[in-house]
Length: 377
Image (cartoon, rainbow, N blue to C red; front, side, top):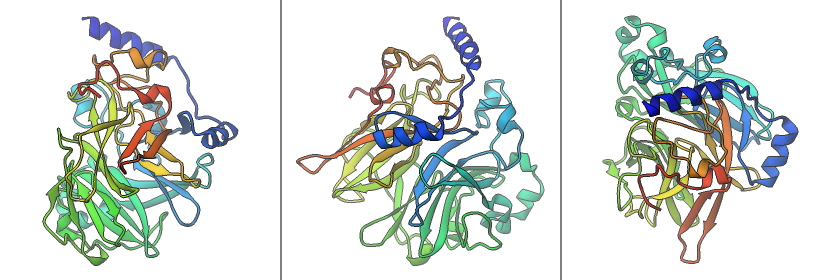
């Protein structure tokens, strides 16, 4: 009863606050200072992914509504999860079936760029047309897209639970805004690849990472897996349950992953963790803490080489106050301080004397595990 009352009170308090993204001047100043979280863009999004391209633009994509869906404004705190929304008695998912893209020269001014891909034009629409024909577009779901510029073309990856179960795509296209044709060189090899992410090693080899976490090198031109996948886990436990990605920092491979702080689904805060290794296949170190409320965030470097991580709203109630957040137990339900939209959080990334990597959120509201954290750090 106490937990239900707490959730109701927090919901009422949070809904009463109208929050807008910071203005351009504030954002530019905060990017330069690199010491606190910045709310850079409004708009319904999960799993925001920021990629700094060689053309000088930051590209933003993520799990989004279909372009033009009015619920993006009218249903601001839709969870975006089916069946989680139904279980909580909330509205059906707002998630759409397109990859949508924004771009910015400075992380402050975001231009809507377009929809370079949609599920009905994907590989599985070609292979299983009846699955699309016999289902409603509102039930088509495209989750967690990422985008990369490779040899003059754009490579997109994403996961999709519907209308073809576990129907992920790897898409090659000419443009990041609109395309008339696509290539799908992975073919059936993309089936069952939940939350796929790509990593390019120093020797030019591309790797696919998926399903928290399997890893395999790819053939030239992304034409399938070049070897059987291997698991890359921390030495002491799983990295998490979703949103895994890989970076090379110094001479170390850094494996990031996402989990709830309590180790129970949708209870506590949605956090980001990491482990390191000398070889891409491991062995990896123990699981370490990056930051609270940073789950399924993108670690990326800005034009000055400073590290950031994207963050977003993922909770069962609207955002809670940052006041004394370091000492507040959030285990009653899924809770966050992130507003709906895209936030970027500065990271401290250090190569230590022994070559190992230290990573931690700098903003105090994100930097410490909460009392609800199941793992001790």
